[in-house]
Amino acid sequence: MSTTIRNIAIIAHVDHGKTTLVDAMLRQAGTFRANEAVAERVMDSNDLERERGITILAKNTAIYYQDSKINIVDTPGHADFGGEVERALKMVDGVILLVDASEGPLPQTRYVLSKALEAKLQPILVINKIDRPDARPQEVLNEVYDLFIDLDATEDQLDFPVLYTNGKLGLASTEIGKPGADLQPLFETILSTIPPASGDADGELQILVTNLDYSDYLGRLAIARVFNGTLRTGDEVNISKRDGSLQKTRITKLFSFAGLKRVDIEATEIGDIVAVAGVEGITIGETITGIENPAPLPAIVIDEPTIAIQ
Ligand code: GDP
View 1 (tube, rainbow, N blue to C red):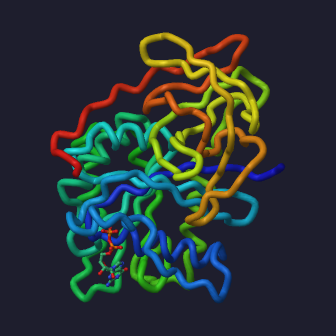
View 2 (tube, helix red, strand yellow; view 1 turned 180 degrees about the vertical axis):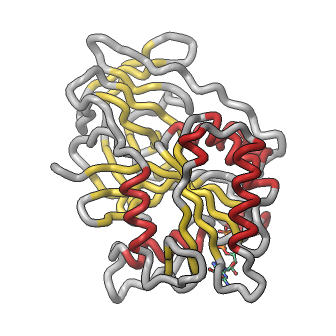
């Protein structure tokens, strides 16, 4: 298959328009059939999140644009979920920094951006809500540059592309003061700025688990990024545990993401973000490895949330 995969996260302070923008991207990329309404808003569909107004669980959305698949990993914006931010950032090769054109960068923007810059990720700046009567995009751009400098961004990271968007109407432009006609400039910038997910499809299996989900009929699902190798349904694998031990298991089902949905696949594609069933004993930060020469990735350190999730 010639599809290239881009894995990105969107970093934003709450209410700066992350959900609205992803909805618009989904709609324009044609992920939804014409008669299928975007009934449920994707990135904050969890009731708990709605109540709290913060994004807690990292979720995945995949958008097809031309011959590329763009996986969008949600990142919690709140410092109380520090460990989750780092895990989400392990999945991606670049970030969209989304900033309200009136409010400018706020504490959550700063916190998650600092983690993304530390992780050496390439940012794209999106200044959103340019339609607001009190929008001040030029000043906000300057504030973002100041923030990058304050956070010790590298020269390359400072050289970020900038887009001006109206997420509500699904418009993006590379020029300040121009509304744009659609989100194509954003899709193009993602493809030209974020490196395609790479790895060796024939190499030793290395699939890093960064989140867990649960299915009533399949049990525990590991949400994971395929760094090397190819995993197939029915394969026997080793779970490389964080204590260094190995646990043999058989993969019962594999999914990748399309739009908001999980779709069955027979085999993984290199670099993709997948959901894996048949891995009851697995926990976050562990690697799914091969039987012959298991080569685990370094386990991710998990900070426990500092507030209780009920
Ligand atoms: P999130 O918390 O970052 O996911 O933010 P939402 O997508 O829920 O958006 C927060 C609010 O901003 C909602 O009321 C949106 O309708 C509004 N909003 C999002 N994008 C735009 C935009 O481009 N222009 C304007 N004027 N409002 C927007």
